[in-house]
Amino acid sequence: MMLLTVVLWGMVGAFLLPLYHTARRRDIWETMLALSSVATKSSLILLLVSVIRDDWMMGLVGVITLSVGNAGFMLLAHLLRRMGQSGDSSLG
Amino acid sequence: MVTHLWVDIGSGISLGTGLLFWFWGTPVLFTRRSILFKLHYLSVADTLGSMAFMVGLLLRRPREWPLLLLAVLSLVMWNTVLGYVLAYCSTPEPPESRHGSGC
Amino acid sequence: MDPVVNVIMVLLPLSAGLLVLETNPYRALVVRGVLGSVAALLYALLGAADVALTEALVGTLLAVMLYAVAVRSSLVVRLGVLQGDLAQGGGGLAHLMTALRQVLGQEYVQVEWVPYGELEALQQALANQEVHGICLCLEPEGVQMITPIQRLYEILQREWPLPLQLEYQPLPAGGGH
Image (cartoon, rainbow over all chains, first blue to last red; front, side):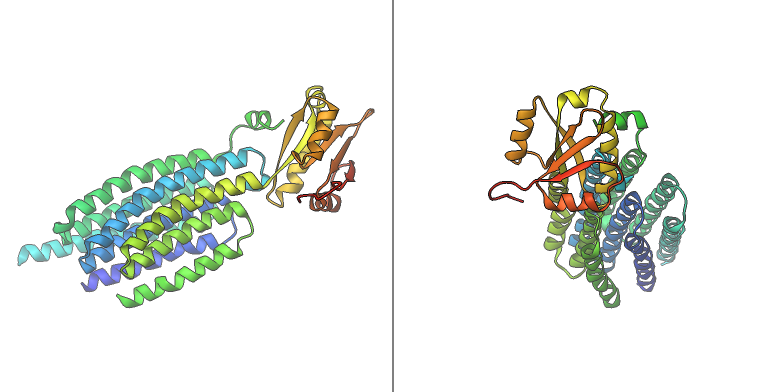
């Protein structure tokens, strides 16, 4: 159980990296990359905690976040692409 | 008891590998490389690292296998497709088609 | 376990502040997704699996889509032009479009042409507030632009790169803007 707690702290540390990257005002696609990374990492943290606590429900939430959230990001990426197409120069 | 020890060691190695993958791929975000380079590193790190995590958790808690299997499947499928979609959307289209849609 | 939950609890107001301080509406959409992820994680860690599920579904999927539609449909300037002007050469109008996109892109506003067949229809559209302004090609060369929106007039007057006759013409009665 000690090992899992250490791994959990490591995951939270890795979770902070893309979160910090969203705070830096860079290109919007880099923010999208950070977003997909944040989504994957958060659901993995959820799965690990569900194993530690032996809680099925939490793991189910992690799995559903993993699959549905990614579908939403795909839609968002297409929308951003279409907006960039119709002339917003700031989207590049 | 001996098998229990081996399972512990194996899951520890898997979890460590996953953590290593995450910490190897995520800092690429902060470099000044192209977006496709970052996408490649990030998707490799996320997918492989997360799969290593799942294997480690599966060794430790075989009772929760349906959940972890579902997570592995959806992770592999969606992360691949999302990587492709992001790469497709983030590269700007050729200039002639861009101009044509405007006026 | 609890220190980890505390760390993630700190992350929630941080990402919410990030979202509030974001000025670009398109980037704000993406940051909204990040906020949804962090919130779902925190809710599930605190034991509210149903709330976390709702946040994951609504926050990252539905809200982002609704905001995207709202941003896309409201941050557009529609400029009426004559179909004839657009068809014949249109060099002045093409230059105008490039410059307009450059200037208004800094305010995250998009520009699009709305072609009309005749001058009467164009002026009628301006009076009916169907368009935010009209552009007319002048005889020798040059473009005249008439807008009833004061804010648009101010922005264009402040940082205008091209020579252009710009005219502010407020609506006669009860302007909606």
